[in-house]
Image (cartoon, rainbow, N blue to C red):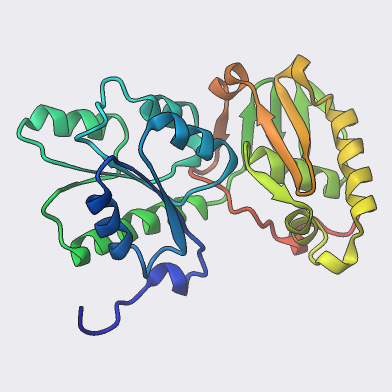
Length: 271
């Protein structure tokens, strides 16, 4: 293709990985070529189970599904997105749709956009970029509170409630809790935690982070009994795991979409 395409995601400083679900290697290559400028990389999955496992451990900025080999009526991916709707990952569906009812089914299941198999790389690039821009815009809207299982976090008051009982936290402890609760299922490295909460990797030693995490687990009673566990990921960092029952009760208020992994250290203070 002649000329250089403008990449608005790069202009925003957004790093995006994609996931493709298809049994068609040729289609996967076409999609990858179309996304080369707006995404940093991606993975191709041939079955939903493998994709769902990957989604549990790695955040993706875009999901592409081949409707020919994935029935919307029985799709496990649709169920996953319903349970994790607060992540709001854009979903593009590609296929041949002779029946308009099938198109409607995918839209009702949460598809951000639908393309025919005859798409060209420019069309796919623009539609994918547009979907991710919408997602990023929603994610940047400020969230004021969220509820996950028995926990409610109120950002305006820096208060965490567990079954209507307020738990006092320092500003830094609340910021740490907010970071993990808004990124459930994502493994956050110690470097990411340090940058988010302390503003710099060099201002915080691993030992300080461990002590901080220990206090947070104890104060919030994080564990299987409450359906939310803050686990140590060996040689990496930490991950907040939420049981299926607790996830069903997740709710964000004051905004929509996924929260950026890196918080603003300036807002956290030095308490």
